[in-house]
Image 1: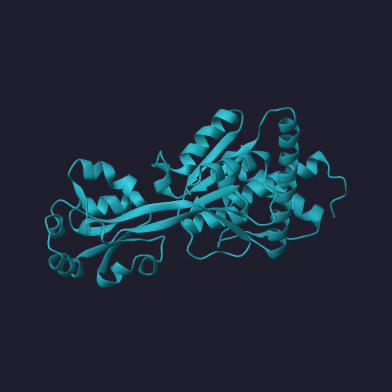
Image 2 (image 1 turned 180 degrees about the horizontal axis):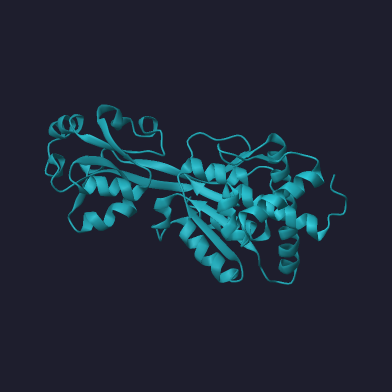
Length: 302
């Protein structure tokens, strides 16, 4: 068993183990640790001996954590998180924000310069120039898992079903339009009856990261012929002139202004998506994360 207090050697072994877990194997961890896989394997074995536990299974089936390994990894994240929080708190008491801040947001918010996130991030960078920011654009499910796993401090996205262990706070609404592009029969359609008939025969581009039939009832009347995992993919499909699909208004505006895309039915099928801040329930937020969270709340749309 590991003695208390932990030695520098113990902390190093725990760091190596955490890196292997996050890299999903020894070979992938090699670049991060800058040592040979054989050395990494030996260090993980040393940690297993020190703990009296089997932390992972390795072989032809790949790298896999045991239940004990999952427990040790979670405890290690808490340990290193507490150490980082200590340093950040001390720096903050001296009037200086430091450390790392990992954030995950839905991809279309990265392109929206008027979103609460864009405004909050700009204010945060001005207030905390010494904080290293790690920004991820992810699908909603991936954002939730990243927050739960501790890979990111906070996230923002569209979450229709809440996961246990997470807290959600509304940041406002985002307007979504149903779009088609030049070359599609709906692009020139004017009459309401024609639009309804043409929609039934239209190919629909589905957002793979959403339960589309629940959030966009009109999609039930169309056949899904394609799906995309990012909002850019939906735009590319629509621009072929063969698909219709939903896009945030701010995202589609560049193609609308150039005459390459238009909303269907003059906004009759528009909808709003609620953007929410998500964070882990029991997690003690870092000082930097708390500052960004407060800024997001301040810039949230009423």
